[in-house]
Length: 174
Image 1 (tube, rainbow, N blue to C red):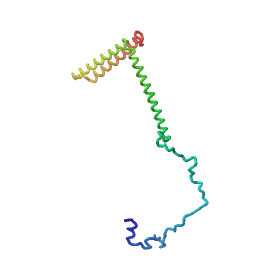
Image 2: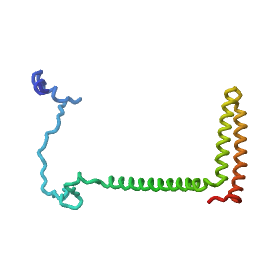
Image 3: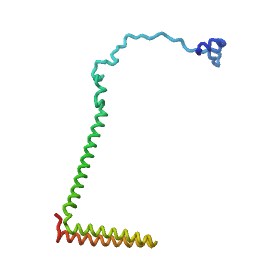
Image 4: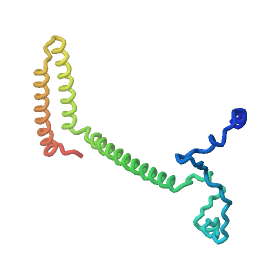
């Protein structure tokens, strides 16, 4: 049932109910609606001409194109630049790794490099085993760890200067 059908079944309104009474007991109603205004003096020049150059048309294959908007084109250009930067950085890192590894590989016959590698291995294993033994006995403390770290630091500094002297004077790198 529609609203109009429901309203038609109800009681009818009196003319007083239809109108709004003002304080001066005058009936106020909306003004009558006039006719449609026709003015032939206005031209249609203000309308948009679809043949003018400011209206853009789209190719029929627009949706099949890879890049459909300038925003997409700018985004793809930025992504290509970022990819190129990442590739350049990767090449630099790879080149740096090759230089470092080639320096080590070329000097494997140098006795200073071999001695330092052997010393680092022995000292590391000795400290690890000694710390385990102290821990097993319950004697491992922060004081002992600090003293061991200080000893390793002093030994490393002495080894650096001795190795540097040997590398410069006796066994220069290739």
